[in-house]
Amino acid sequence: MPAALEELIEALRVLPGVGPKSAQRMAYHLLQRDRNGAGRLGKALDAALAHIRHCSRCNTFTEAEICERCASPARDPHLLCVVEMPADLAMMEQTHAYRGMYYVLMGRVSPLDGIGPRELKLDRLLARATDGSVQEVILATNFTNEGEATAHYVGEMLRARGLKVSRIARGLPVGGELEHTDIGTITQALVERRVV
Amino acid sequence: MPAALEELIEALRVLPGVGPKSAQRMAYHLLQRDRNGAGRLGKALDAALAHIRHCSRCNTFTEAEICERCASPARDPHLLCVVEMPADLAMMEQTHAYRGMYYVLMGRVSPLDGIGPRELKLDRLLARATDGSVQEVILATNFTNEGEATAHYVGEMLRARGLKVSRIARGLPVGGELEHTDIGTITQALVERRVV
Image 1 (tube, one colour):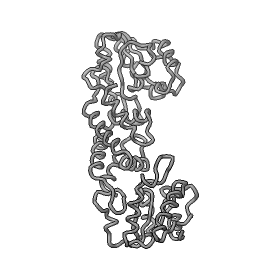
Image 2 (cartoon, rainbow over the protein chains, first blue to last red; image 1 turned 90 degrees about the vertical axis):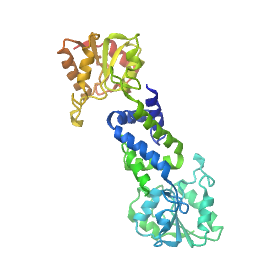
Image 3 (tube, one colour; image 1 turned 90 degrees about the horizontal axis):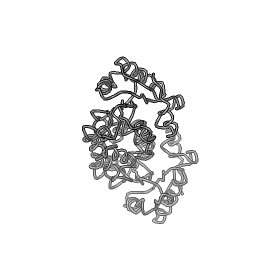
Image 4 (cartoon, rainbow over the protein chains, first blue to last red; image 1 turned 60 degrees about the vertical axis):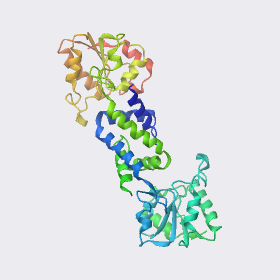
């Protein structure tokens, strides 16, 4: 097998969920049937690496120093909603039931994967939550074991600084994830959040 | 969502079997957890597009004008084995039961996908098979409907030129594909090939 093909197949395996057989099928497909697509993907990777960084306020992906949402004067600066991933933030926004700010953890506490408070850089969340503008932190991590553990840890950390901390209501099914829940249920969970 | 991220997610969908949700998960994974991997993949795509082409004799992927196998004096020039994909060629080689040459179709006749003899560029196979060196063409396309149709069409085409054409034996299960068959069965099918 030519070296450049072998390297492409190996490189495709950096994608989550892609094993040796799928990587081979993908490489063949790109080289045989969609060379334009391959070129586009290569350029998109370069551009994303060059331009995408983390918002210095909410930690989500952005091309600016501060993302549009954090810079918007229309958002309520007293509320800070903590979510695991940008996809979760997008679901919260779709409820149209929340007009506050966000903090995106970009993960969750997961001891089995070696992801603890240090890896999540929770000190950055702490700094954001205690910058003087925030009056309530709403924990909207998933209701999985890892999401619950994350909420527990973050809640303890923020309450110790005298912050009001709430958790979105357990309107979501146990074990459920925001990304796969209907908007109505997420809305209900947001409205029924309770102080913890 | 930042434009470069949106484009990366769209671009990842050029990969076969990747829908909107997986593309999003892949993009987050690359940007958050494996930026080195993303850079490597981008480079691998560029390098593959720049260096990988088709062998002018057997049509497989190669970085040279003629691939190593076609250039090797150790191979029997009188036998030409026709396979669908490079992965099938690799399986044939693993049997150690074949020392002839190959022609890789890079596909199969598939009317539903709009792939006919013209799209497969079967005139190139015809030219290769009638270049004077080949005494027997062994059809080793899959025993799927499409592989069988391909074998039938190619067989007709080559017999019309007076070539001896054989088909690997139906030792493979009906509906089976070379890529997922054990080496012993493929060996048997090769040994028991019959003139058609």
